[in-house]
Image (cartoon, rainbow, N blue to C red; front, side):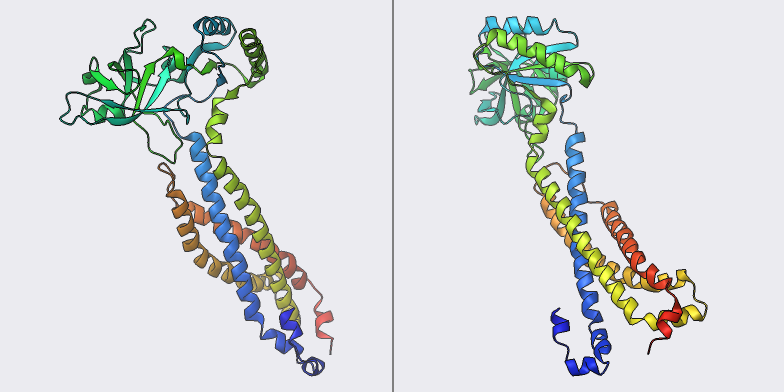
Length: 400
């Protein structure tokens, strides 16, 4: 509208308006390139975020995350917990029940330190302490590399399990060498190492795996978990039975539960919101880009009305005329992609650098972005250029 308002009425009345508009074709092309530049950057970003979210879902965290229900424990009285466990184990499909301070991937870690006497340094190492029971490793399928699990009869609370990262801090390479060793613990005093387990992710994938030490401490049991086998259709019945057992012990407190898999994905809620925003804005940008491309093709069709008529009279086919418009579209989208690819790479590489565990940017993301944009552009161009290519040449040539 700014360009049209700048036309001189005298020039328009003397039929020079078309030539004035023709001089602004490059402006139109430039705007279309900018529109598709933004569109392709957003498409690249959307594809990368989708890939990273799928990576979150499929990444092996070092423990089982499916078919596990967790629920809070208002009290850790041994009698009540025993009654709940015994009743839950009678339910069909329930394989294991465990009580702990928190699930493997949880922000509820007890931060403390540990030391190992044979080391030359007497310094203490930071570690994440997890309070567990004797069923914890089996329920979550955490792999034991050496030794045994914590004993059910460890009433002295003197046993500990350590992770591979903690083993390295002790200066040991072979997990078996740690069995029977004593560590100084900032949580409950000295402990005897009875087992070494494989590292697992105790935080989200933005952070490195911490050294982890697991100990038994019934006074810190604040979360229950059960593992079940069966179809999703059986879930409502299982939850109803769980609620019944829970309410029998805690009648004055509202029952609550969650699926472990849902808890894990809640760690990436910010990324899910970013993905939704990219999807919305990329859709809007593509739509606006298509409008710009449609407008450019319409402008070209109006400018070349007589040329198209002459070509058709001389025997040009519909396909040849469509090809004439398609070349313009290919060039503009190609220029936009050349500019968009490095911008998208820089933005997404910077975003991914915030994750300790992430995907690698691959060529398929950029190929998919240009392919999708070309498809949308081809459809948009075809809608307008087909009308011009199939018009009657008599109508365009008999004017003036």
